[in-house]
Image (cartoon, rainbow, N blue to C red; front, top):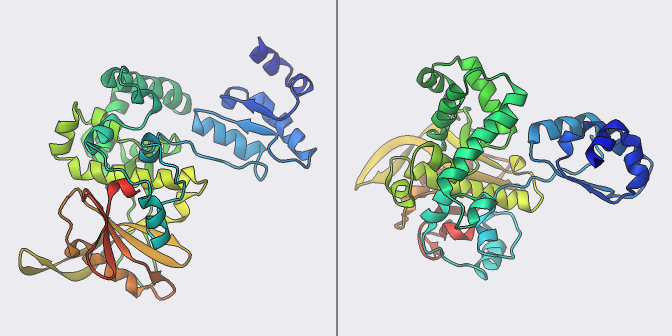
Length: 368
């Protein structure tokens, strides 16, 4: 009844409900946005309204049209490893000495990190009584029916599910529209449209490459990451944590998990990770020691965190045996004249922090 009255006479809502007010699933009450704007403009106080919504595209469309400059946008991602471990540290992952010292006070190694990777971060799945298979099956169906069907006319829902699976199998890889189009039998134009929808609705994150005029051999193709590894495991049919840990996608899954946790650390601290996080891949031929022999290969850095004029290179490895050569590409950042290169980090499955050299250290994935 309240919803009907609000839609029919939105002006009366604020006569009967004085701020501060919490409005949940606000995207369903678009009629209120002009009145929220009026209320905000007529008051000098902040925090009049807390607006929440689960359909990001519709919500942000109304926000950008009516409340630009009047609202702070906070992303609410899936539960982070810190939250699962009840860690109090709320700083974004920037591997400085201060961060590592503070984070180390609450460091706790996971008994089986792959159970967490496979289960995923959706809150409902933290209840062990919730069936993993049933949850994600229902989630995909609801996502396509509710979110996607409202945004575009998907004539073949099975085709969209196949597309979603094809993208999941490429998490942690450079975006290749032609490859996805060939596999799914849809046009590249449609692939680009649908990938944009996945990003807008928070299913994936498109990470942009780090570019600089000094790095003229940089590859400018972005990378694609799913925001939840449990969803990737479901779509790629890894039914157990054991099969995920030993499957062909294991390295990409581990990298996706680490990247997702880093993004969550920024989002939960109220920072826009898009301003700070990128990656590098370039045709800079470097000499790298491998199996006792020198080998030339492309330079690649999984993650670059740009903070306060310093570039912190991060390599993510599904390994419990880190080696200095894993950080061979970090030297590429020395070519960037206006930035300082910070201490490099290898995030992996090692059990404790470890210095490999004066400029490279190892951190367990739990330190994120």
